[in-house]
Image 1: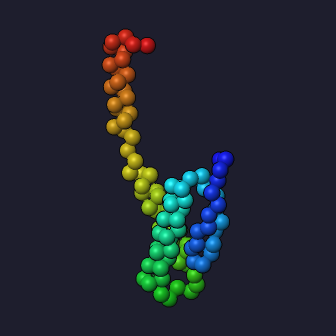
Image 2: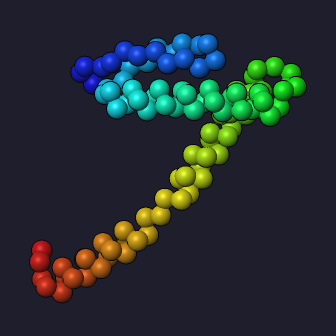
Image 3: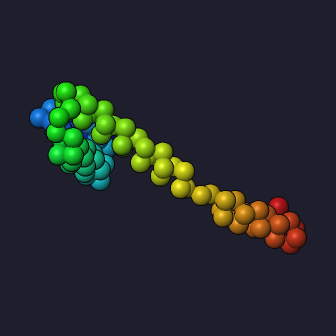
Length: 97
């Protein structure tokens, strides 16, 4: 990455210095940081008596990881595999190589 952008995102009063390639990537990081901050606050509101902040952070990480796993499971490539297989059959039938 030649021209990296130096940015700072803040979560829980912790500034994280980052380098990103594009303004679009910067937006993704800022949106992600905002989502994490909101998630931690919702957990604080739902479970106000946890022993310390680490519990909220770990719960937020776990929730985020669960969402990522579920999203990965929803990606269904089978229709594309079938389409490619059908196209290969057609190509074979008309003799294109």
